[in-house]
Length: 109
Image (cartoon, rainbow, N blue to C red; front, side, top):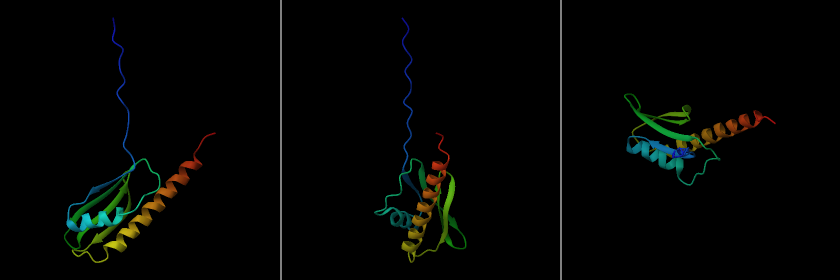
């Protein structure tokens, strides 16, 4: 008697904002970016990255499914992080809106 093969569950977790920052400044940026913010419905992933920069302290960038939608040099002080996080949020929302409109234009009837 053969045992029927069971399909492995096929699922993805989407709609996450992942923190891949390294420093207290990067973590603060991530907190400011995500605090009280609900991005438009999106099933992909949004990732906040950071790397040290010899000249400017750190570089922080935001990727949406491997596309960089925001990049900024951050100094070693927390001054201006709120404004930079607000700008990043606006750029993310604009990108997601553009993607959503692009996909709607591709619907096949």
